[in-house]
Image (cartoon, one colour):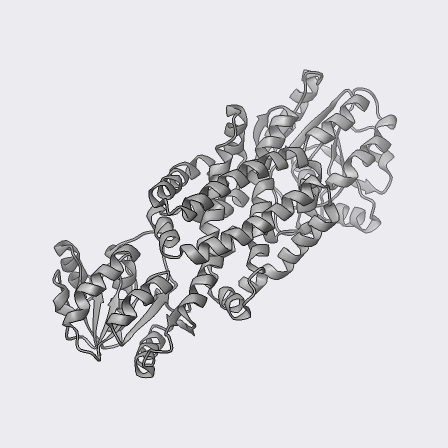
Length: 278
Length: 278
């Protein structure tokens, strides 16, 4: 299959490496000439250039730009594509993307490979990044089965765990396990800085260990990514945030009311059911 | 120094191992005869028994029971001690403990070695558990300097990082970095179970990865420990919870109001200042 990849960062680059290993011909597009050169020399793509039209004769195109460039890039590219071209994206929010692109592209299928690294960019692209990690497709009633089949075959070649669901179900699920944790964790960091006694703040910083480190990790991640996930998945994120606040208020009331047995009951439920997510 | 350890679990046992290595004579007390036997055979103590009075001629006594047994155990023991006996504890909350015991014991000094493991009990006691970890003493204006000096010398022998502050400052600091994270993290687990669509909940469980795992870790910890820290540090914990809720509400308002630049600003502050705690 001739595969186009628009946006040569960690995700686009890692897709290129795996697809080339499988014998596909991979064409890359990046706005930065330097990134195009590096992608060819790193073996991420067979050829690359800055012109979107370079991928127009590909059979399958992966849109791998950041979320905020995705729709605009797609709308520039779509008019030059044949009707049968399959287009997918890798954004972490799906409803807004699918609603924007499906009317313009009969063979568009939303996608979300759930793999990542702390670092970004083409230099950290790696083989096998998606292996054993989830890769979600979010077709709609209008999506041609053949487009889903073709993408599923490619996803299998990545050795990823394939899931399919509606865009809305995807967005609610990732709000719970990916976007809500960022907000919860960032609020923890930010809350500590509300401490008004500098001695206590300093002591807290000295005493913090693995518990604080783990709970605060995703809240201290790349700000732009956190902002984009909130912006493009705001409806599902708000739903999760409201539920979270209600649960938190319940715990606060238990502490206020010294309902220690009830509090321990909630913590027992957490201990028992956290493994459902691991 | 003749050292007494009351409560032979992970912390008490690990103190015993290190102090014996330093040449001290260590006497242990546990309510369970089996634990006494194991402590002797594991080399954690020189001798052990179920009677509190067994430690009465020790120069320094470490109270290492769970928080909810601490004051009661101390009040049983104190009348049989000489006035110059130094007594300390290892509880994770200090104000309530110090207020309860200081009037009955002139040489009582609150303490908190901040080291732990997922497992509990004498079988997982280990040498060097406290090395490079914080060990906080919380003397008051009434504490004799000689008691602090003696304990500091022992803490140095554990190669722990020594800190000293008031009981109230300790409690506020650990509320931020240890007790609040448990509540924040437990609320995350519990919130996910508010999802009413079983397909979405199942999908969320399948898609959860390292971000969810880390953010939920301390919330899925031992329920009894979470309950005890809330119970014995409820004032400082509530203060932190209120501040946290206010910060969370601010983030929710930013998402509701689509204030993406302001949201990114908060996330930038988190990214920049999380390292202050690491």
